[in-house]
Image (cartoon, rainbow, N blue to C red; front, top):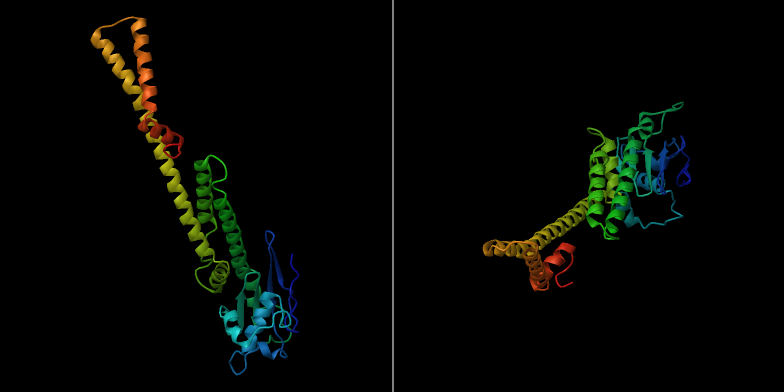
Length: 287
C-alpha cells in the first residue's frame, strides 16, 4: 500500500485521503479542502489561477515541485485533462493516483460537503471500476501472449474467447451513470491506461486466432475426408470387381482386401496422399 498524501506544496488536507488496495498496484486518491490562506488553489475574482492545477497535479502524482521540477511550458500538457466538477471543485486522474481539489474555502465548522461524499462513493466507484477493467485487460493480454504455448490451440483460444465475453458483458463499461462527473472520471482513467485501444487490439487479435483455429479445423476435416476417399475407393473397387467376377469365398475376399490396402498404401505415397495426411495432422504440406 502506498503512503497517502496529507498535503501538497506545504498545504494540509482536511479529511484523510482515500487509499485503494489493488492487485500489486497501490493507488491513492487525495481530497483537499483549502482554507482561506491557501490562495494558490482558490478562485480569485471568479478566475482560477494557474497554480490551482499545479496543486491538483501535485496531489494526484503524490509529489512536489522539489520532486519533479517542471518547466512552465510543460504545465498545460500535464494538467490538460483536469476535470471541472463544478466552479468549486476540480479533479485530475493520473496513472497512479487521483485528486480532488476545492477552489473555495469552506465555511467555518463545515465537516462534510457533497463533493467529499461523492469522492468516497460514486467517484470512487468510477476509479475502482477502471482499476478492475485495467487488471482484466492485463490478464487478457497475458493470455494472448501465451496462446501458442503448448498443444491444444483450439481449447486455449476457446477459453480466451469465453474470458473476453465474460469481461465484456460484466465489466467493460464506459459509462457508470446516465451523466455526470463519474463518467468523465472513468473515461479519464481509461485514457491514462489506453484501455479502449488495448481492448480493441485484444478483440482483433483474438479474432485472428479464432480464424486460424477455424482454418486448421477445416484442413483437418478435409484431410479426414481425403483419407476416407483414399481408403474407400480401392476397397469399393475391389468389392465391385469380386461381384462382377462372381468370385466367392474367404480367399477371394482376402485377396481383394489385400490388393485394396496395397493400392491405398501406394496412393498415400503420392503427393496427394501426403497432402491429405499433412492436412489431417494440421501441418504444412511435405512435412
